[in-house]
Length: 532
Image (cartoon, rainbow, N blue to C red; front, side, top):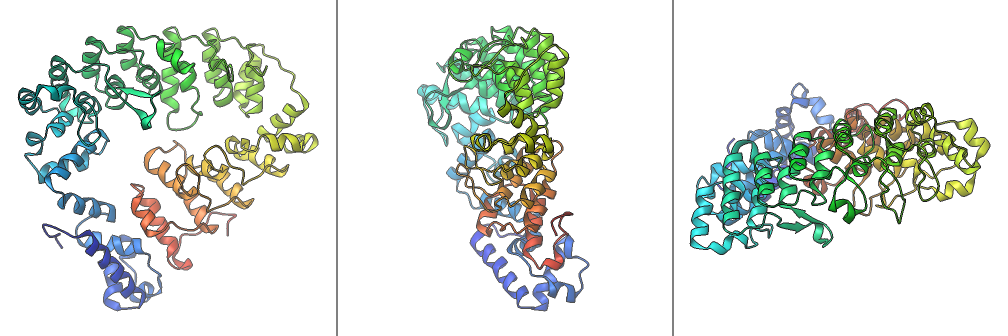
């Protein structure tokens, strides 16, 4: 079945709802249509009649009948086919700078002359001829903010995700803009924050990863120590880009950026936890920074924590990272403003291998009784934690459960830590277990009564929403996101509404899983052991 030239999304939604209603009323013809879905292809009439189909199922049927793998793909295609030219140009430009090149390409097939007719689309595509015509007619366009994001033209070029295919065109376009007065240091404000300008160099070097364009900007005076580029190139482990920035004067300790943020690139990237999506990249970036002069003893946030990079590594990383820092001169006896050493922090955050590496290097630390209690909790020593139990310490550290391992979390729950305690975003430990795909911890928290349907304050998202987002966009290497989603649903988590699900991008496997649980319990996948 083909879509009409001007499809109506509202009508397709109505078709899905009508199909669902007919299936639920037992109409054989409606039920038979669900066999287009692989999960039901071999179901008998009786088996189909026994299922309590979800709206997601009906929408998937409509999508399959029109030749699309998912409702999301169908919806996006309908949106593309119903765009007017101005809308299409704006959407193409946004997609080109926001990592959605598939949709940008589909829009180009619908409007083949789009880039030739729209100045901002040409910027994002790297069509130097169109940009040249625009500048010839109106030279002021080179520095005039505009387009769908209200940026100066150079920022659309720098952010363009067409770099792999059109690097030469994008670089030529940027050169033309610079020749017409564009500022290589132009920027825009992150979330409107006047203290957080994001530069064209950062966009080219850390977002688009466009090396020729980054070099062009640097040659035209872009500041390499802009407080972002070295930080995020190191975060990405992009040693080639770090080398390019350094060749134009960037400092491994961040230069002026470090003075602005009162931290360094090394300290910043060590704020990531080991074992997450950035793990290998951060290790590569840390090694480059240290080999190029980063100071492992630079005190960061002197008015707050007064930590060095070694302190950050002790809180978040492992013995290998500690050994790397020590090999480059990190002072294992340095103390934070509160007097704690790296060893104390490693013990208090359950970083066993980090603590072992520090002790092997000669570190020694006497913990207070309260600290001994926390250390016992974080290493999962239940007997010692019960012996040293201190209710005042538990009340003073309500959010520590979020960073504990499953073994440590079990000990902490045993001595009275609150499974429903929330962090700065209104999130619980269960939200973070979902975000990291930590099935063992999620099951433990659920078994101890963690709230399944609490929405955080910042994103207004359920734990299941955190699970889906990370699975679709930033999965931890060893995360079991489908297992976590099953555990949540099996324990009674409320599935998101159909309207909310429509806003979720990607992660079709979790969407299908939610649809499974919306049907009759008999048809849902079995829950994980221990959650029956």
